[in-house]
Length: 130
Ligand SMILES: Cc1cc2nc3c(=O)[nH]c(=O)nc-3n(C[C@H](O)[C@H](O)[C@H](O)COP(=O)(O)O)c2cc1C
Image 1 (cartoon, rainbow, N blue to C red):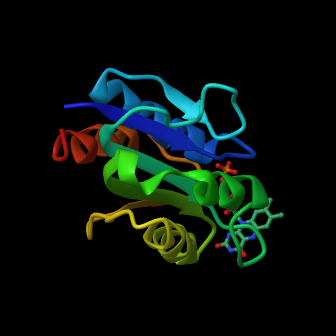
Image 2 (spheres, rainbow, N blue to C red; image 1 turned 135 degrees about the vertical axis):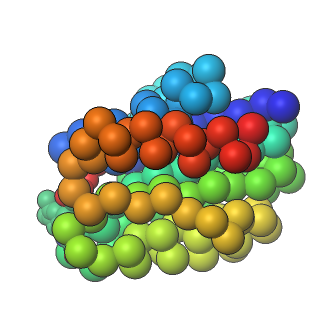
């Protein structure tokens, strides 16, 4: 089983969730801005996270999703943080679907900065897909 974790985070909230997921999967959480972010070989599960900014996802995340080669991704799992709206999940899901990537129905969402027990929940959530 190969797994990858990719995220975009401005203030660290989504990054914290990405790192908890990555810990469970024994991989590194990689920002979509990193030169290491590209998916160049098949992955069974791609965890993708982003937050909502003024009702949309950041253009860095959108461009990254648009660049994905859907044939290399078995399934994607979406996670997000925001103040109130879970809409980023739908926006990420739609962008992945446009790349022909199937997305797990189950998603992970926290309001704002995750606390310790939420980070444990994130690890537990990730293990379901491993
Ligand atoms: C400029 C800006 C715009 C935001 N717009 C929204 C929004 O429209 N809806 C919402 O629920 N949260 C909004 N938020 C809250 C962020 O989604 C939330 O703080 C999120 O956890 C940030 O994640 P990050 O630290 O991973 O970047 C906004 C935050 C900022 C800084």
